[in-house]
Image 1 (cartoon, rainbow, N blue to C red):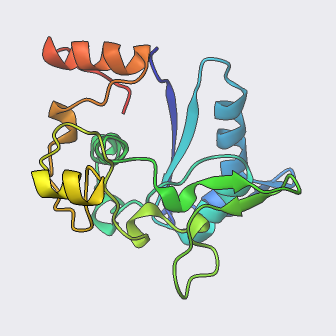
Image 2: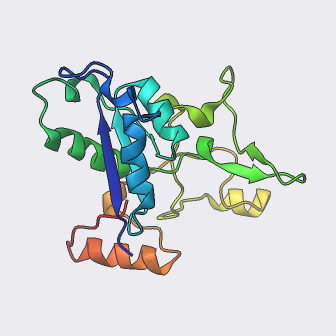
Length: 195
């Protein structure tokens, strides 16, 4: 399955019309129309807003877009070519893209509780991913364990775990048909859009 992205670019400052993206047009911020078009497109899986403005990011989220990361300042200059922010979006989406700090559990009353909390942060799930603690995904590519850990503690990991960091682009955790197809495309050297 190919993932289709709608990327909504929205700089915080616009040289021609100040505050353009948040300016109300017929009662709605201008950016809301771009987000709505992406959401209404039946072939689009995700609507991603690329912005350097926290205010624009908040409005975009309220209208249904994802803002999983902020656009760096060097990519919002008057002479910044569009290709640079597109490459930034694709590179960011290719990273470990499901932060457990943005995951939820359904409690007994049927409402949502955050899966994890961050000390001193009231709503970590509303922060850009870069401001959250770095996490690593266990893909089970290789386990090395001492025999005494297995025999004496009945554990396959023990209490002290050292990571073996692998390049996500060159590894695969195959649990579904989509995972299998992505791994096959990677091995054959075919570009795979899906992160």
